[in-house]
Image (cartoon, rainbow, N blue to C red; front, side, top):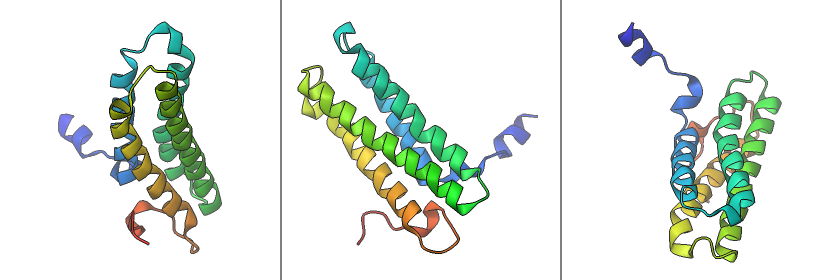
Length: 136
């Protein structure tokens, strides 16, 4: 039974953008452990938005229709942008310094770049294997 479980992998688990979003979720979990009650609203919103990224990527990748799949990737992109704003707010409120949020912002930049490319393709395929991120 263990071997069968190790061989089972869902298509979204192969996506670089999904793997990167999981890294960001781990970053958020670590970052928010030390936030004081004063910043709970931003903390809670950041956690929700971070979870939404990988959930929408997984859900979108499971859709058969290209327009619907793109829509879920666009929603995931919006959640990533929301996370970036939450990190900015934490810095503005003095809850975290720039050095502490920079790794998260770097992951978000990569996530947004990948999701942008995944939703811009003009043909009938949508996936992250076709995109070269960070190149213009």
